[in-house]
Length: 640
Image (tube, rainbow, N blue to C red):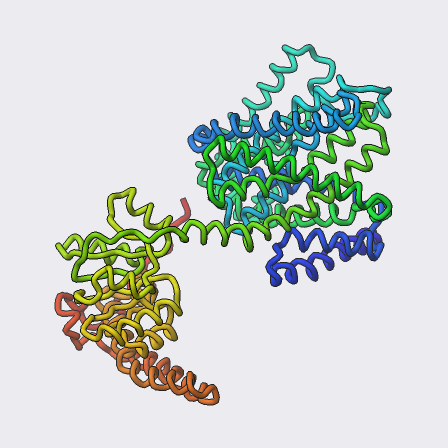
């Protein structure tokens, strides 16, 4: 028992130390886990032969991850993916298998071994790819969705691969241990095997559709969260076991169950319950991959191992780029698709072990290829970093580095920036017959607006020549809504200096940006979040029992107090900007504002009327006291 505690402590300590550091350095959590595994395994020798056993257990994290992914989809969305799932995924497996097998055959391997290597190395790492895509917010992009489709097809393809590998044996099976595993289909004829598999899938769909709701309802009524956790894990583990018994991928089965439960009212509770287990097991899996690297073999055959790993990744990336072109993935999406799936995957370890058991591969070749798989997985976080820091910025610059649109119209209002904020301003003005000239330096954003017939022009609005072409000299107003703090401030300063007759209305990101825009010469500045936050706060007060009139008055009081202190805080900000030692005075003024605001909230404002509240009917005096008394007298409702 002591050994178990010590091993658990070592693994958790490595994760706690390495992963936050990797995240802070912008390397991602996956690389942090892998480095932690290398540190406690090959470098420090704190873990040993138990790593492989722990890895098999930790692979259950992949099963949980596919279940959670399934919960995010529904049957309709899955059907919409069919072209990418079958076409893109199927071609990736076939073409990669053919490319790797052809190269291996050309290098002198028998065709049986070459074909086995092609199928094994065609797999990619579901764990690393999905974790990295979700962590970096890339899962919803076209490249991310296409990558997920390929990974899902690979999970399906493992089933026929396991059936084909024994047919490629060139020697006697190394062991018969695999026959000791429990199976519902062992020894059955093909037609019976198919019926059992279809029955298992049908039971998952039927149970998920009709049995889980009463089950989880029964558990939820107990009010014991730990029992709900146990039932959620029971569901996933049971489905994984059933899929294993009929020879299917456990991850594929739980994914199907997740899709069935995607429309269930218990979906969000299941997500929040499973998520911590998924994250912990995936982290443990990544650590075991790093800890399982055989540094003795790596150092003795460094050039060969690294060359094979890079060669496999290059072949897969080239195949994926070809498929990206065939399926019309362009820009950053094609690079994300190609780089994210270029590695070999965790299924490679399973298939390599199975191939050795069946006499397809020798133990020496199997050990070498296991190292190649591990190294390719270890290099994958670096490919995501390459995509984020090098490729994505270049693709974005290339998309924006095109000739500026010819501006063929002018109007009294120029809107600089047509994102979520500028769009609303433009729609309101256009709806009231105001002619606007809309400019934005993000070409993709301009294209999206043209799709909905909202005319806009591509170009860098901070360029004086573009402003002149847009008619700034004759314009009455400039609305500044670009997503660039420094660029917006510089634009306001330029227009105020050269076109003083133009009224400048600007959007600010925060209080400091408000002051900077005011200092640059903006006539009117609004914070993008202040009024929406004030509205939500008023709604919160109303739902907590305050009369709508009283809530509106308190919102007005806060707005008036902000305006009353605005000039004082602005002057203090200017002093802090010029002399950092005066920051204390600015903080004191802000605390003074908070104290005054709290005092305003405590006043009885029921008898007072602001001009902005002239359309409101105030509640009768003593409304809050009467409401509180009613709530005390009302008995609590019984649970349904």
